[in-house]
Length: 592
Image 1 (tube, rainbow, N blue to C red):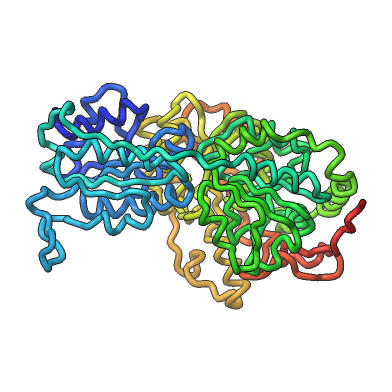
Image 2 (cartoon, rainbow, N blue to C red):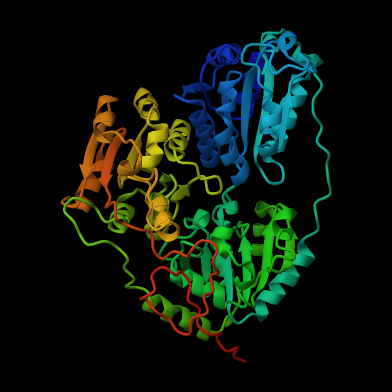
């Protein structure tokens, strides 16, 4: 059996239905085998970075291994950005890179390169994969594949890479003679005593809060999260990666918190006396820049597959009192089994105070004046959330479009929001949406992306057209890098460099390009009837490109100045200070 055929059959046997990539001299045998194997299809991307990201989007939405295949040298190195997305967000992906023939490898020679396009991808990818290996002998392929697959899913999931020399891809092997990988079986960590101790402390709290994050989607815990929320009956706030875990109108859901979060979520966090964190590593985007001021005097509990994520705060100002090292797909069902309804705790005064904050900030408005030329971003997101179908997969890029979506979209039960939360490259949303659309072509997929991000992956519109993927592409076109403009206004007296067309950016006529590529295209601006136009978009069959004209002067508020604390220690609430995200009230009294 040809080795490349063995590789592809291995993937098919584990449920992989699509691989993404680009052809190249050192990958032709792998792609040839894909074309000849039943049950798997090849989606040809326009750039290898997009291939890795499409594999990432495929894995996030299916729970299966996402796979990208490229040739050696630049083909392989172009996978790096997408690989980082998977590694930092705990997404199981496999990068299969072709390599020059084994006799053309430079080995220990004091040269930079022997074979044409030879590149040491194992070293380059070593810090952003859980396992990276170059195949040294054809008979090792089963071991490498089985170990890579196991590593991609075990513990905290992530990306893996196998680099296969060209002559090994075409080598003949006998599958019956290959040696497999036997993972070391470890006794599961005993967590029940720790869970019970943590729940006991939670039961004593007067102002508890549950924080939900994106780790509850890798793997997706599903309905058991909602069941746990009902049993605990305490206020819930989320990271951006977790904003879709509860419907927006759930009585316990108070939305996101953090540097760009709404004020209510930050008030809850800063005045809580017990915080239970599930699926979040408490990044600086959540804690603010001064860690010692985060959650002021709350007892914090974390459940995480990575002990390092809980230990990283030691000596830094945040004390994690309860550290439970466990995957959430094990911990959440255990919590559901152990927890009893919390009864009258927390006391009604806590929920009443939160309701008061909700009322205080319900009329916050930091938007520019209405215009016939431009759409208000928050108004558009609000209208969009009214028409996006239930159970829709929604991909959003980075920058302003991500902020406006996470703060304004009203999620329904079953809808899922995906982004590259921790690597956040521009140009993620469209190729990731392609990965999801390939996996489930019968479903529509929504893609929200900014003009800066689309310029990086513009060619992937051709991939959408090629396969007639049912993707609704919403371009948030504010004619610049809005979030960077705001940063320069804050730090450098509005000395714009490379953030809009007058300062060096070169954009194109996106509407014309979309039409030229064969997409149906519409423009929505300030004169449009948002609801009517969006209903037409979702009644359309097949892909469509929607150019949404966003006011270039629209900014992102509320926002905490970079490096500042969530607690600004001002004496009273004020809606006049719009550059500060968190203005903390005095502690609530502990009521007996």
